Amino acid sequence: EEDALEPFKNAGFSPRLGTQYHWINNNYQDFDQFLAEFSSRKRKNLRKERQKILQHGISHRFFSGAEISDQLLTEFYRFYQMTYLKRGRKGYLTLEFFELLCKTMPEQMVLCVAYSGHSEVAAALSLRSNSTLYGRYWGCLEEFDSLHFETCYYQGIEYCIEHQLHRFDPGAQGEHKIQRGFRPTETWSVHWIKEPGFRQAIEQFLDEEKALVKQDIDSLITLLPFRKN
Image (cartoon, rainbow, N blue to C red):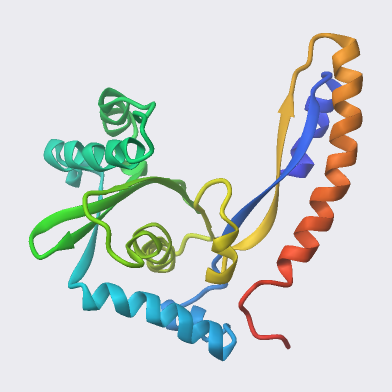
């Protein structure tokens, strides 16, 4: 958060402004109440996406803590690797990494599994705090229209509503999230540049970039699907 930057700046770190797309829970009782804030056309488009999943016969189930068995985790890891292999490379995280997460922080693990009949076809793994759902590592065995949006975004929103989490942070990038109700949000990082000459040049760039990022956020906010009051 921006108000946490001062100690880093005092220690010589250079702050950088970025943009992510976060979903905010306005005390929604269910997904339909969230959709009620959309304009009519945007609401219809999103419902069509969700309807496609039902037409494919896809269902979803959440697992956390001890519910995430070795078999489920291994299956998720296969999906995760498939996503990278389609782009001609291997996923950079190992199965041992995910096993360590399950061992050391099981109650923070949230695994959403998509089923076609009784078979797992996709999964998205997130982490949660008391207020936020952080996503996600994802992969699928088969391609279904809108499966990615449903598994990675809409199911996460429903999870946040059910568990009264305030925020859903699904990860970096993706302007397509805006049309699905994820708000352009300022995010900050801090960077230590040891060489003074480089630091001066980089900080000049970061100042110029900051102004452009703020302009971009103001522009992106106008693309949100919510009704104009």
